[in-house]
Length: 314
Ligand SMILES: NC(=O)c1ccc[n+]([C@@H]2O[C@H](COP(=O)([O-])OP(=O)(O)OC[C@H]3O[C@@H](n4cnc5c(N)ncnc54)[C@H](O)[C@@H]3O)[C@@H](O)[C@H]2O)c1
Image (tube, rainbow, N blue to C red):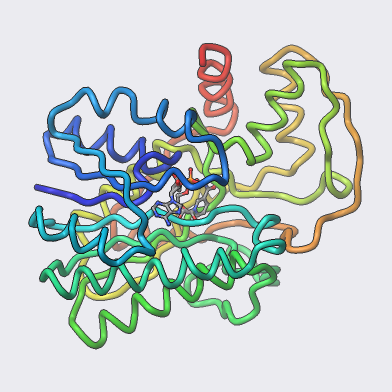
């Protein structure tokens, strides 16, 4: 099979590229090395993939239709896995237009290129952020997501909506996967587990927002990749599917696991909750189990161990 991965130099995209080429598929990866975090980190992410002749990397911007059409004209993709995005909740409050440009207009450009070149299968990365401060736990795909609390969340919901439109108008098969906080080797440097680990190692204070009771459904990267690979195999019709662990870890617990694995105490700088941050995320994964046969297996403690091993050797 031949796949297009957008955002292939990022955290999730580079792992997916490694996985698909290890299974013998051809992968074309595009990324514009967006400046949200350093280009050299992203280049490092794809170091092993680019050694494989089944991986071709193209520096391209999903908001530039001509660049996309050029890529689509050269290859006959069986499926597109659309991961490219402006990620991060807090910066989206500062730069909302950029988030909508990439996450919404960029998604439309991908869908238009698919239409133009007859590609009909898409896996679209969405996010647990769309649930906002959902009062019902765990979060289910049938819950209302009409009340996003950050531009990032609104842009991800808008991405799901345009995907549905193309499914309806042109019969595309599309699964939108709502990832719940992803962690593991190559995790984005802006995410809390990564920032905290680095600061604790360097004996610097960590900024902790709120009293530590906020909680996340942290999902190990291998489980996310399992979910995406199953979705590629099974994509049919239009579905929104949660991909999480369905376990909730509080911020205090997350910090104490990192401390324990590093055998070092954090210096905590306690600050008020940040606007746009949600209190809790927790995935109902019964739909993923039923439709995909998804079965997440990573325990948080083990996942943190793997992350720290990578961080120390990186
Ligand atoms: N990591 C998480 O916890 C998480 C949670 C929920 C959803 N997601 C979603 O999963 C996807 C992957 O996230 P990630 O953590 O790997 O982020 P990432 O920032 O590491 O990867 C995204 C990649 O997209 C690229 N990109 C950005 N704008 C682009 C453009 N205009 N053209 C081409 N490439 C562009 C970036 O350079 C980056 O390499 C994103 O869609 C994100 O919204 C991630």
